[in-house]
Length: 227
Ligand code: DC
Image (cartoon, rainbow, N blue to C red; front, side, top):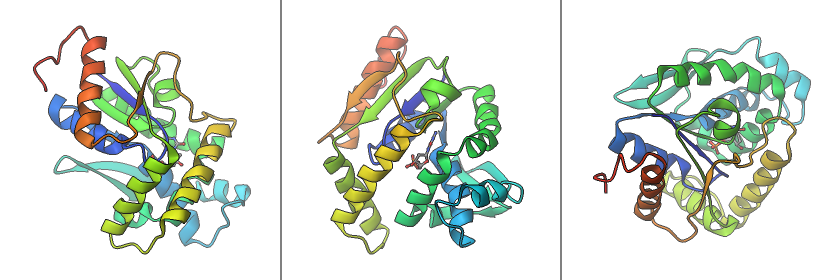
């Protein structure tokens, strides 16, 4: 059983994927954290987001590794756990920039495919249903209005003690949506066979219930006792 959850930033993919993983006994793989880690390296080495050549060169110096500790995913960049350093607004914009480069996508491809090969995963990202797991048993494309997503992201950053304002969070979301959707390689668009789920105004529990409903429909009711 493999589940793909794609969708734009702030749509609640990671909360949903974590809840599904816990209830269904699957391994949660947050693929955005991989792009964030590659972006963080450039950010912390003073490389401009627009400097494609320099970003591609960093791949010779970088190792990225996924480890599971107490059931939680940790990303190790050059042997060091990146922790929450990948979650700042700057790191988000760098993640989006590096993710547009085919070389970076190819670099991160193997780690993701190794996880798929182990089986029993719920993976979230942008190209999971289209590129990484085209044969996933269930594909969900989760989205919400930019304002709903910005509000969630804003509150999440505030709760982590970051000094942000709503308007700039919204502007970043709109800019990142555009860049992720319009890039040439693996654009963030739904797979033809993905089920579209608009969770504007939903609480996480509503999104979870809607997703379990979709999973049940796709698997002939295998999880009808979950809710
Ligand atoms: O899901 P996230 O916000 O953590 O992702 C960060 C960035 O990484 C996002 O702007 C697009 C990119 N990304 C991607 O291109 N492909 C993925 N599978 C996951 C993330």
